[in-house]
Image 1 (cartoon, rainbow, N blue to C red):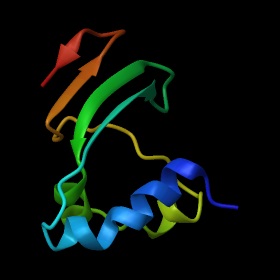
Image 2: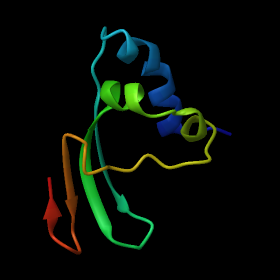
Image 3: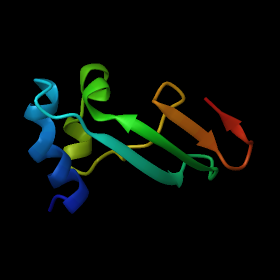
Image 4: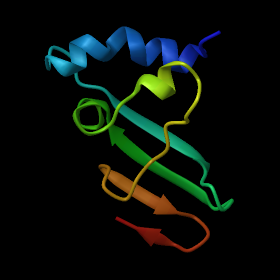
Length: 80
């Protein structure tokens, strides 16, 4: 069973790859060491850099990276 969030991104994948649609995603979550992080992700840019197969089948989470449009670690106060 695919989560609704993954389904929504999967339905926008082709349009983002061809730049007919641009999607900015805001996520606030915890990283693998338990720090609260948040950021804005350019979906089209991440599609070019990352393989989303594992995300679409529920194996991986989509989390903000320091290379995204913005990134903030609420525990260390690091931002980009």
